[in-house]
Image 1 (spheres, rainbow, N blue to C red):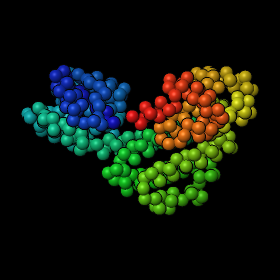
Image 2: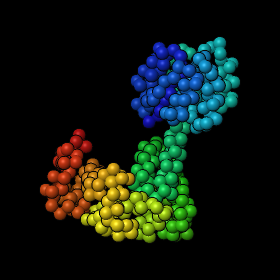
Image 3: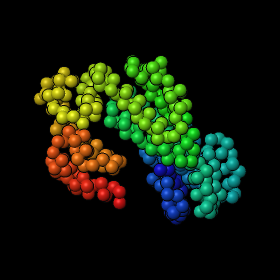
Image 4: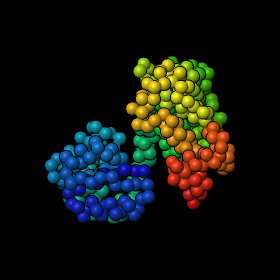
Length: 341
């Protein structure tokens, strides 16, 4: 989703732009509006927009000055100057100093839509860079759940792009694999070292994105298997150790005592630690995680309810359905039907 900030001291001008964007682009949304240059700089820091439509003549610092400040702090932000005909030379010079493009006022709706579409690839590239950074940071921080969420967001974006250009998405997937292996090396992990896993060779033999997706998921799983199995955590990082252990073993019957033994803590102390750090008791935390996994299986697979129940260590399907309904508010069958509707 492309996030857009509108900067103009005329309310009607901003409203017209918002309507054009809303009606003309399903993958774009206006996240904020500013009336002055100072407000534009503040909102850019707060909202992190992908694109800014910036009028030149606004109160306080003008549009060009505001754009310079924003570009210095957030060079990836795309800025379009809105300018009247008699300011054309000024706007043309602005493009040369780093502002991405300009639009003559009054702009037609098709011109607004066209210029956003023209820069869509830059927005997607920016999003991929940010998502990749989030993934690497979560691996370095040894946060398994965060890493899985960040990898999924990155892969979803690349998979959407693969419809138009699968070769490019496969190349990006290979680069992500390289970065994951590089991070693994800096952490001192041995299982996913480059001399044991040749990413370039592996991905050169993959010709569809779904296989590349599975491969990246396996790399992440292997990284955290080594972290969990060998207890490779920083000092005083008990809560990440707990979360990662539960994430890896959620399919089994996990007890508080088992996890306490894994992290070498007293069970009573561990219980208080989980409550303090996660805001929920240990048993409820494990149960909620199992139900989240059940929701994924109900949405993404055709597995029978019985199989899902057994896979999550609920030997009594009726009890599983009871727990599921208590947390989700509907039965597993009703949930599956709602997701396919």
